[in-house]
Figure 1: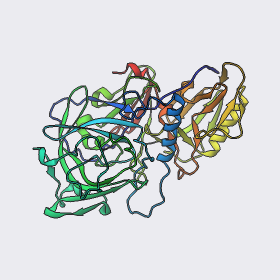
Figure 2: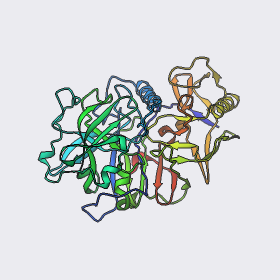
Figure 3: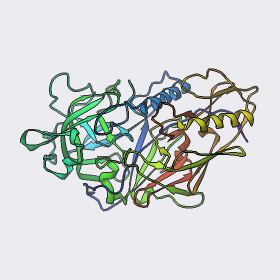
Figure 4: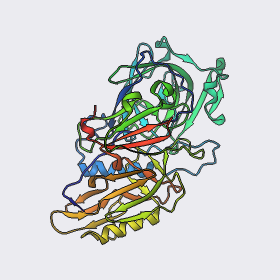
Length: 441
């Protein structure tokens, strides 16, 4: 049992990709390691920061983004739609990206639910075909290294057939739509891309979309100018870097309220080792090729273990989703164990977006601890990764049933905070190690 005193937390960082896709980019330096800062949407470091919001407001806002993120549309498209951008939200994490020669800085949404890297470009198709942004549109004519991708190139064929057309001068034109009806249409191109990273590594010939007709729901403050796709598809950032980073990346998510950025590491620096490291197999399902799947065998709550009844590769690890989503029967069993083993009395109508809340007397309450049993890896979670205090005497679980999510179970970012999480895409494994991510370099 663990005494819960005050729990108001965090969400941060995200990203992924796959090892068996083509690396199109070659670094201008021989280093295979670099680090990117990831800024949470509601952090004081974010251009979207609203100082009038309380910690509770920020937490609720992120949780609602999380729910909207996986409310997938039932579309008949022949290619999978990417994750929705909730109305008025910018996605949970932002990063700086530098495109072209000379490099032009842009703030982009880092999105684990899609693959394409893109920014708004001039000219727009007409006066209403681009969304408003504070900075000038990226002008490919001002970059000496900008090169359109031809319709017959292998890079163009990496788009689904109904995502690409052949435009004028044999230029590969793309059409990329998200589940909330956001979209980007434009020209597929290559150019130099770099990041606000510790090493200053630049990747020439990176494939990205130059958007000339774009509509999004994430840009209410006009700060973000595009998306860095971090899913597992062939055009995502990690897939493009491929051999350059040894098909390895890791992140460390800081706690909510921290004035530090979360870190996304690539290459040798992404490797975690030492005491406390546990590893579990990683798989990519052909039916959901963007996502990273683990096998959850069961969850221990206090002294009792609930076995999973789902098939193997049954949970997606996603640093872009706030809550953890579980099969309804497992969620209900957990609620029962929490109420039976603590002095918490369930409330009938928990405040949105929570699925279970309980009231208690006094200034603190003992609650059962959680251990997630992945194949080969038992991950013991700190109390603050599973519970939050909504009011002085109202305790809520940071878990939800996956009803309405097409059966998807998700291991979200609150469960992962203050862990180093390494993805070895060639070794097909994910590793966990507890850490103080605020001090992670």
